[in-house]
Amino acid sequence: MGTVKSKNSDLSVRIGRIRLKNPVMAASGTFGYGKEYKDLIDLKKLGALVTKSLTLKPTQGNPSPRICETSSGMLNAIGLHNIGIEDFISEKIPYLKRIKVPFIVSIAGGTIKEYQKLTERLDDLSGIAGLEINISCPNIEPRHKSKLMFAQDAGLTYKVIKEVRRKTKITLITKLSPNVTDIVSVARAARDAGTDAISLINSVSAMAVDIKTMRPRLANITGGLTGPAIKPIALRAVWEVSRKVDLPLIGMGGIMDWQDALEFIICGATAVVVGTANFVNPLAASEIVDGLDNYLKEKRINNINKLIGKLKI
Ligand SMILES: Cc1cc2nc3c(=O)[nH]c(=O)nc-3n(C[C@H](O)[C@H](O)[C@H](O)COP(=O)(O)O)c2cc1C
Image (cartoon, rainbow, N blue to C red):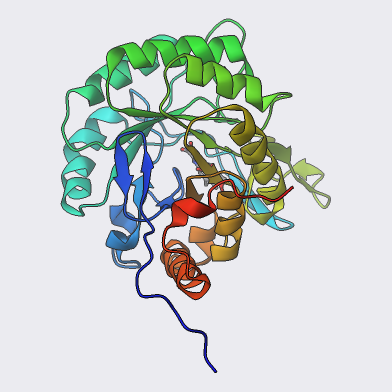
């Protein structure tokens, strides 16, 4: 006898003021500005997409080689190569608005002032569902005094998110780094400063060496590790933060299929983000939506929210 499936399952979730029709999003930096994937995937299937992180001015990023494959993952040191906020507004936003999927704009700066300016500029515009504050890129050097990534210090995280919060009412998502001793304290600082949600994790600082040339594989020497190799690290981060910080969490790190996505949801993620998998299979995010939908139907669970944080311990 075949499995009896229930008719309807509700996949929708809420992140701050953003309602997503399903919890699957495309990750910043792995999905361009949306349009690049339009012929490969039905973008309407996504719950939301997050743009490549934007800086005030266009930047060329780091020298090549800036990506390489590693065991169960990849390294990148792109260095925030992006078109800059003004070209994004004039060239990309009109298309993003037309696809009718919530889009979240990721921003990155070297100083608090830069984050403020980026936020002010975007706050004037209509159609943006949320801002993801990338304070955790391991491949650029911050230009404030301590030279730490903002997300490596709870005090700096508080300051930057507080200043951004002052500038906008748009839903704010703070993106955290795994390259810290205590991610919970940083998450708490972001919450206290007024973030609406937390996304985690950004890439893990790492490196690779070519023994023939005896050189690092990346021109930048170090880079950020992503893909299946980091999934256990990401799950641990989501789990720890979910127990201590009562905010919606957006989990990512090595999600390749719906089973991976479900692990994150069970550990406390309200939504999940697909990154490196897009390079292997551009349909990954769309297949994950179908996989979660089938799972709910087969298990006769009528609402995905019932699974969030249901880890049995
Ligand atoms: C090539 C590449 C570029 C990335 N660029 C950004 C970026 O601009 N901003 C950002 O917040 N994260 C960036 N990330 C990190 C991803 O958004 C995500 O946090 C990370 O890849 C972990 O998810 P994954 O293992 O599914 O890829 C980038 C990742 C990759 C692989």
